[in-house]
Length: 90
Image (cartoon, rainbow, N blue to C red; front, side):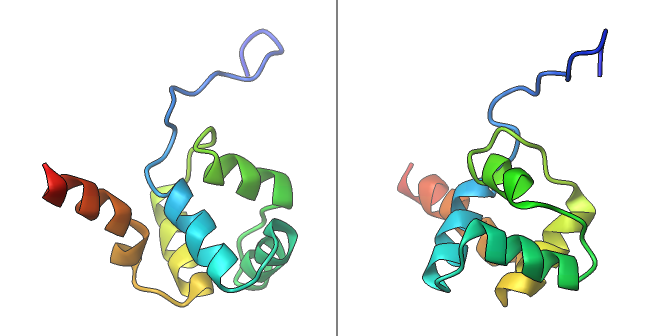
C-alpha cells in the first residue's frame, strides 16, 4: 500500500491467468471451489484473488505456480502452454 491506497500492478500482472481459467473450467470448478482446493493444498487464497489472477490483474508468486499446477493436476509447463502456442505462430 502507498498512502493508504493499494499499489497498482502493471497489466498484465501475470502470464498464466487465462490458462488457469481454462483448466479450472475444464474441471467444472467454480472460482470458489478452486480456492477451496488451493486452501487444502496449503495456499491461503480466496475466490476474489483467484478471479483477479485469472483476469491478469493480480500477480502470482513463482512459488505458488507449483501449487496451482498440482491443484489442477497438470505439469507447470501446461500453465504456460498458451504462450508457447502464440510464440510458435510467429
